[in-house]
Length: 53
Image 1 (cartoon, rainbow, N blue to C red):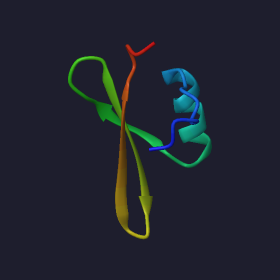
Image 2 (cartoon, rainbow, N blue to C red):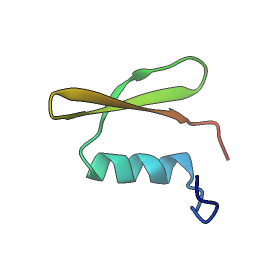
Image 3 (cartoon, rainbow, N blue to C red):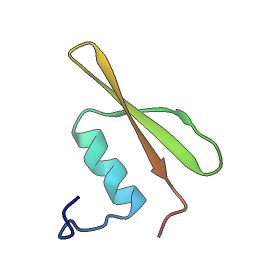
């Protein structure tokens, strides 16, 4: 993975995902949230650690 990728705060990442068509799927274990998007009838699930800094 390239080292020049910026890190994002969870809330900013969620805004970007929602603009891209992702929807909240469900709460995960601990303080994780799962977001989902269907692409060509395939599900793409993104886990986000809300407690990350």
